[in-house]
Length: 210
Image 1 (spheres, rainbow, N blue to C red):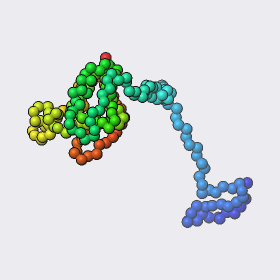
Image 2 (cartoon, rainbow, N blue to C red; image 1 turned 90 degrees about the horizontal axis):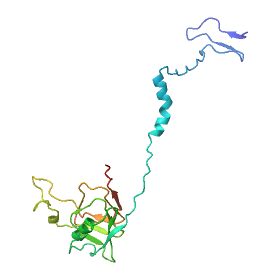
Image 3 (spheres, rainbow, N blue to C red; image 1 turned 45 degrees about the horizontal axis):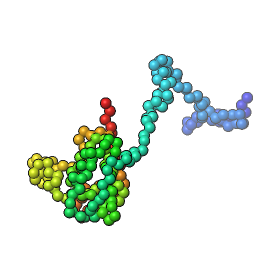
Image 4 (cartoon, rainbow, N blue to C red; image 1 turned 180 degrees about the horizontal axis):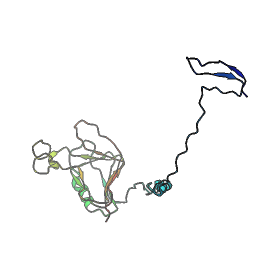
């Protein structure tokens, strides 16, 4: 039973309202409606997709075990003969010969010797199965003589209609299981007065699968 006061007629300014005891409720507020539950999918295909979504997301994760690269055993250790900035003689031939005769799974290591820390080289070609390691405190520096990079006589170091005319410092044509790594540096020497950037080297070509 409601007890209280009624305002009588409805006012034009708003709806009729009531005030009363603790059990009374204002007519200004509509009854709270329940939020409808999400419908259960009736399609067997959709139900199965929702059921297996969790396990399939776990199966989609990459489960391969990635192994940290390691330095292969050395087939040859070459010692530096030049100090930094020395342009007297190239090491291209002895580095290339060492790589040509290195067995699979082994490395040609370039290593500093006292104050001699630089290997001066022209274009080198990697061979399959071997790794070139530039040891700590050692630099493999590119020769500044454009003639050693010529694809054909006089082609490197000029701009003409033929375009590309230089061999790269290090190349590998259809090689597998080959790479370059080490804590030393490779200095391309693109600018005459540019400081040498000493960066760790660790890159390996992906093996070719039959």
